[in-house]
Length: 267
Image (cartoon, rainbow, N blue to C red; front, side, top):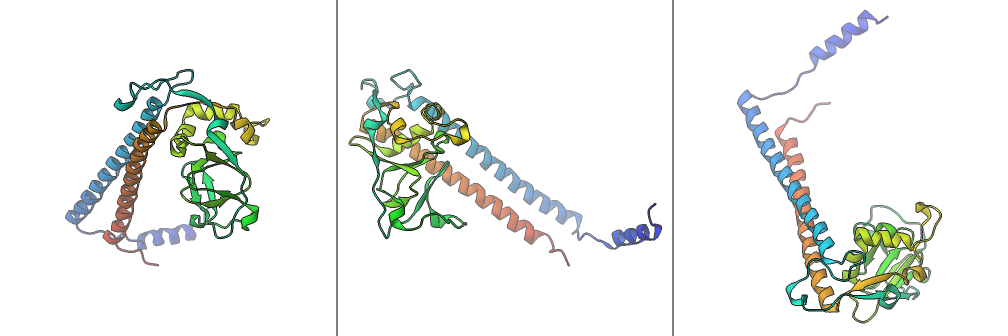
């Protein structure tokens, strides 16, 4: 049975609590201000989603579908060029096995952001930190996580650096633009192929060794067309990053504004 004295105390506590509220006109003004910010945030969010969808659709057209030798969309200056040549991945990329050197930054490979400096992460790493225990990656090499390549965990090195010995380092051959192939490896069809060439009894144990990667057949255009496609998609990436930054700034602005528009709680 509930204690009547306890209930009376709770009732008194509720009556003592007050919510500060300005005049009705001020309330309406604040609500209108925040509603307009919500509308701006929603519009930015829609624009960001539309840009991401546009990039995804464009990538599907700029690369040939499985079993085809030409993309559905080609830049005007390359429409008279021949079919994309099928080559083995091992003819496009060599397996770099150079030991690390002192003084180089250590990078990690992520699924969504490519290669990222370890010192930019807000956490500690406890694996090998000495240079000799890591692999050297040269600028414009592609490094991939052999346990996560089937999910798109790869990236192009922005500078000479070091990576974990668990990674595979791909050194591009002449006429091979790494950034173009980084985009290629992110395609859904490519991820299926990367999965099929990986070894493991279950998905969480899949590993893509270089010798298996080297056997993959890949359609590729000349280096000039590779550069054109990579530049096009790179400009979309820059636009996406700018929109994401603008959206984040709007959300931060709204949060700060709300803290100023309402009285701070006491106690």
